[in-house]
Length: 535
Ligand code: GLC
Ligand code: CA
Image (cartoon, rainbow, N blue to C red; front, side, top):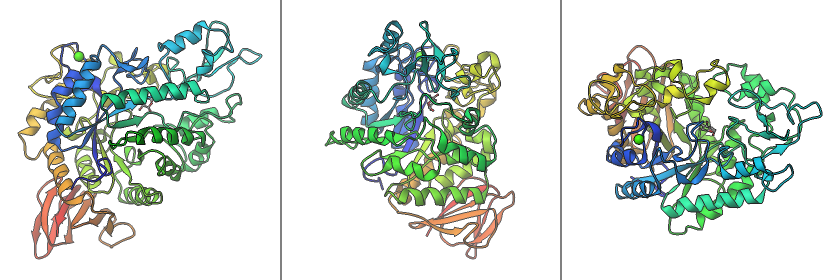
């Protein structure tokens, strides 16, 4: 059954426009390309798409550096193409979410260009965070950019501006009412064009505190915020709440106002999901209080090891926390900022985990290509584009691996993605992973996703919460078996390298690998696999 409102237990497919499908042979995906493939998306069985940014942008940070939030970048098409995309999506029963980036603009936005020309203390500069240098000429404080290097850049007259990310992404000053009202215009612009909601980039970052004070451990907080830097969890968890630019109480006031705006579209079910990396996890629940946003990303599975106790902890905690504010959790195994799940935990493991996660209550986010079991792309350093790679002088490779274009058909790269030269190279090794090959193979990852999403809707959504059957705290079968019941379906995930026999009767709905032997009230679940059994 479809949930109501539509977003409550939706499956939402994230499209990175530059990498989806190229309609004009310039090597980059575009809006017309997406529109031409929406049928494919609908047949996958998802409820909605979320489009990463396609706005006017110099593209220093994959379009998350927005020069005009109310227009389309020519590389992706134009506003007519956006309208058409929304129309076609709706005609196929798909909702459309667009990404908004309220924390910063591109330095090419007209406001920033005006600020550069204006004087210190001017209204133009007050839209951003411009401050004088300290007496010794150094930046106003010692914060470090999330992309490496200082988070301040000096302009000609000696003032510095703040940028939590690349120097081409000046942070907006949300204390300034002009910023807030301009953003409302942007939200209305897209809603009036027909979108069904928003993914809010860096939703936890809009309000900064102690802007003119040094942090006692700037490198520490910078490392603590990075998933790829290993750190003693105790130290990390002590540092995170001290980050002066994330998860400040003031952000919630902004989302209360946005919620009123969304709700003013009375005949529509508008939704917004926050990208909020916060700690402790309970803080995430604040973003989805009933007068704020509808969903908040749960990033725990993006770097979770394939281990029963860890996964059990994430699932139980996420469900319980969200329940405390009457919300449902969200689940994501991959996105454009993190290594693809098949590369991170293994192909077979990724199939098992996907099937496990799709049965859980809440919304499921699927990053385009995940349904093909795509690994990260192999990218020579000379082709890298991510500012992280450049700002860290190559010390960190950055996120391009997850952003390689999709393989559609044919026997050699770029597999129909473009008739030109793809903006990031695809490898010939992906020959068996194309949409064409996988559509024809009943055992492919693509067909696993298609079947699972259909079964999810038939048997699982709207079925309420779960009851654990096997976990580190329930049952006693094995330390590498997780199982729960939801509605009339039991879900078993065998994480071990050996098959495991369990007592279950019922009809096998789907399995992620191998063949399942069932007789005498018992089933043997193959190594590293998940099954759904209907009672
Ligand atoms: C978010 C986006 C990421 C971007 C950053 C800065 O984390 O997901 O891709 O680089 O914001 O806008
Ligand atoms: Ca193109």
